[in-house]
Amino acid sequence: EVQLVQSGAEVKKPGESLKISCQGSGYSFTSYWIAWVRQMPGKGLEWMGIIYPGDSDTRYSPSFQGQVTISADKSITTAYLQWSSLKASDTAMYYCARRDYDILAVTDAFDIWGQGTMVTVSS
Amino acid sequence: QSVLTQPPSASGTPGQRVTISCSGSSSNIGSNSVNWYQQLPGTAPKLLIYSNNQRPSGVPDRFSGSKSGTSASLAISGLQSEDEADYYCAAWDDSLNGFYVFGTGTKVTVL
Image (cartoon, rainbow over all chains, first blue to last red; front, side, top):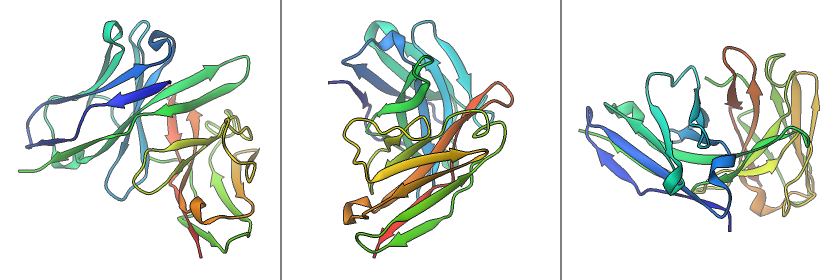
């Protein structure tokens, strides 16, 4: 079964660092991009950035550039999203999602999603 | 920053047809295909429509998508109670270095 399994909920204080994970299984992890998506409480979906685990090529949304770091360890088929100094405004649910990209079939969508990791930042 | 605009809400009675619009620009919908995602309450989003009008395996044919110029739409025919969810359009945007954008989201209520 193709799936993405994310790490558990986190409760942190402002200024602390954090790294959450997303482990892929059931497919060739190095052949598909993995994206991170933020959903603040009661709000919509926001695309943060994406990484290609095969060569660690990474792109960020302008809104999140410099605010977070996306990385991957292909040896353990895991992608990461990290913060060096959390803010209360980082409180949100974070999803990882696999990009299904086939230029011949003109397919380009996020077809597999993780279950989400809730991050709460509060003093 | 969402650059795809959707109506905040839509509703219908069981069996009715509901349509959701998604308005973008030449750098996103005008240049790239549109995808739609369904998010049931308390769950992760799920791919509903890809490449403007294609349904992944398992998605009922009650759901259909279309695109024209810089706009797209999702139609739900034969509305069912289990269709009550948030729906998001999305597309790649070719401006700057390229990034993916989601629509503002539409809450569908089954009356």
